[in-house]
Length: 215
Image (cartoon, rainbow, N blue to C red):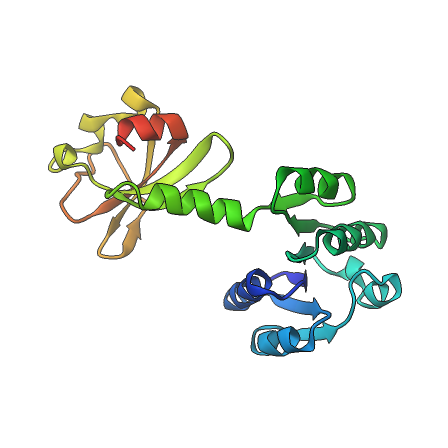
C-alpha cells in the first residue's frame, strides 16, 4: 500500500482516484472545485478544497510524506506546471504529471516532473490498435518499441505446442501466458498445447508483433 497525493479531480483524476481505491492505496485528493472534491469522497482517504498553485496551501499538505504525487490537472497547463514545480521544491519524492502534448511534457520534466503520462494519447493508441484488428483483445505499450498484446490464438497454431511454433526463435516474440476461461495460466512450457477459444499474452518489439500476428 502506498500514500498518494492526487491533484486535479476532473474525469481523469476521478478515474485515477477510483482505481487507487480499488488497489487499496491511501489517497489525499485535492481540487479547487468543491463539487469535484465531493464526487471523489467515497474513494479517497482524505480530501482538501484548495489551490495547488498556492505554496502555503500545498506546503500544509506535507507533500514530502507521500510516496507519489500525481498532477492530473488537464484544463490549465500553467497551473499544472506551477503545481509540478512547487511539489518538487517542497520535497516531493515522486511527481507524475499529466501532459497532452510533447511540448508540455518537456516543460513539466524540466520543472520537477519525474514521469509523464499522456492519457489521451495512450487511450487513442490503444483504441486504434484494439479495434482495427479482430484478433487483438488487449494491448499495453511498455515504451516506444515494446508492447504486450493479448491475442486470439491463430488458427494454424491450434493443436500445436509452444515448442513446435517456436515464435521466439522465428519472430522474437515471447509467449508470457495463456488465458483459459478467463483465468491466466503462467506456467508455459515447450509442451504446452494451444487450444481453441483461448487467448495468449505475448511480449515483444511492436514491429515483430505486428509481423507475427498480421496487425
